[in-house]
Length: 226
Image (cartoon, rainbow, N blue to C red; front, side, top):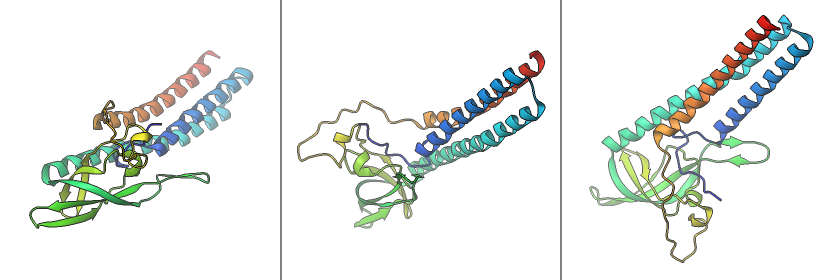
């Protein structure tokens, strides 16, 4: 079983975005089939066409807005990461605990939580050991997503960003499942790059727009050739 990704919630598409995207596809397919079957059986009906077109816009516009907003959030967060790397102070830190954040997804059957890592590191300038809690939530618990609790952080004032860590590529290699025996990790999977994550978000918007264009094309063909 593949471990959950140790990524910030604004850094990538997540489970909630996947549900929204799948719901959009299913609703569009359903409306398209309903429109096609009705027109094929009863001929074009202006009232039905207007009703279905209205539903297409009602369902798709919020989804398009959601993914545009998500793409903007991801772009801004990636800029934030670069800002911390450029202007922050670099430390090697240990994740010692975490606190729960706002749920990423919540239903009657299950909940997907977010987590705020708590790290400890030694500051050579002040000659003190410092403990800090991340203000930015992460999609997965470090115990389930990492094979080591040692990470690289960049600190600016009372805030920090985790930039380097050891992901667990399977559940058996996670901190939550490891035993006292030494486990040799082979890094087979590269971390998903920022550019790929943004492309995914933009791709979802393009898919929604294409569905609207397809509906308008079918609508034009039905009116002109049926």
